[in-house]
Every structure is written in C-alpha cells, then in structure tokens.
Length: 322
Image (tube, rainbow, N blue to C red; front, side, top):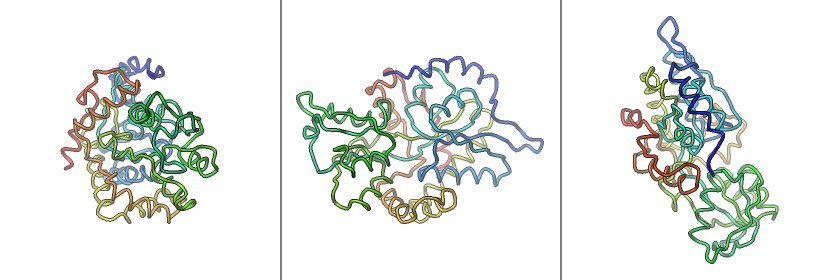
C-alpha cells in the first residue's frame, strides 16, 4: 500500500529548495532552528541530550512535539523543521516523492518482538485475534512478513486494530488477543505485571537484524547550508549512545532529566536490556543495512522497488563522528 498522503511532497521540495524556512542565522553567527519530535519516549532522550550540546555551542533550538511522524515529514519537506527522528518508512515514502530529506543516523535498532499467551508457532495463531496498531505500522509489516514466511497453507491470524504498544500489552493481559508485537519497554512492563504467563514468539531484532525501523533524518537544504551544526548534533548523538552502552545508568539519568514521569524501575530494566541487545548505536547505519531496510519496505508495499541507500541517506556525518 503506497502512502498517498505524500503525493504533494514533490511540490513541497521545490519550495524547500529555495531555502530552509525553519532556520535563521543570528547576528552573532549562531543558528536558530526547529526540530520535530514525535511523542517523546525513552528512545528520544539521547536526541534531546544531543540537542542540548548544540545549544551549549550557542545555537537556539526549538523542539516541537508532534502526534504523528507524517507531520514531521511534511514539515521537513517544507523546510519548517531541520531535523526529526522517528519511523523510517514515512521518510522513505517522502524521499520516493523527491522530498529533500536524508537519513543521517540511527535512532534505535529493531526492538520489536511478538509476544503471546504461550510459546506458539505461526500456524497456531491461525484465525486467532492478533493486536496491531494499524495496517500501515512497521510492526504490522514485520508481522505480515513473518506470517507469509512462517505460516503454512495460507494460515494467518485475525488482525485487530487496537492502539499503541502499551494498549496492546494490556489487551494481551486481559485475554482480548492471543498475540501482538511489542516494543521493549512494554515487554518489560508485561513481564513485571504478568510474570511468566506470556512468552516470546519471535524476536524481530534477531530475525530482521538489518531492519532499521526508527532513524534520524534531516532537511537536505539544512544539511547543505549548515553542515557544521548538523555535524555537531550527530557527533553529540553518537557520544550519547556510546555513554549509554558504556553504562546503562546514563540512559536512566537522561530519562530522569527529560522524561521524569517515566517509572524508574522499568527504565532501569529497559536500559540494561537495550544495551544487551545493542539497540543504541547512532553510527551503526551502513549502506548495507539501509538497503536491507529499503528492500523490506518495498516488499511491504510502502515504497516501490528500486530505491538505493545512496538515494535516501547522507552517512558522511556518522563517518565523521566515528
């Protein structure tokens, strides 16, 4: 299914080519610009910390919180936002429509896994209720590929659109669904509340290790006009991820500083397991895993075949940060 909402982005790219509307050079040579963040969570706090490094260099950065990544993509294409970070698929859809957007770093690795009421095979879920966020969600695409390759004889679950990962975890506990794909934070919460009553069915981080569902991307005009500021941000993000991997408590401290409402016990457990799984590696993008990500979304019908990693990325910033 192609995302028709991006059909106008080619026209937007022509506007953005005239200049980055969301950035302004101040009299002292520093920059003022906006960054779009979609529903901040534990994966976002290293980005917020990196933006504070940019602020410490004298630049003025406004963080705009949005409800959907598509809103950030539209703003990036128009040049209203300089940088954003969330789902990779809408960024690729926009790039396919010639939007001036480039993926510049990884936000977090593939943290998704299917959990069920018991350790079952794909065929066992035939006709059973399976919770999804939406038909277009990346976790749904991963699930559908798993079903296509692992279920036999056309067997498949009955997909029920429920809501966010946390809501689906609650539905699993309540017995409303037999299985669903969950993010790591909701897996930790599920294990805390339900103990061993639920089991992992498949770990997409292992079955799809090269898939990068969440990345950092930027307006191409901003990257060209303000390369030094973009490099400052990417280098700071790479360092934040390195600090997390050196000591998971650094992630706990970042959450306490930027998202104090999060439960501390769960955050500590999520931090440790994130490091164990190697999820935080901003500089981990390569042409190979980006191409694997592009190919995955082409198979899922999100974009047409033919896009290359070079079409979608500018990896020079993470190379310079290494």
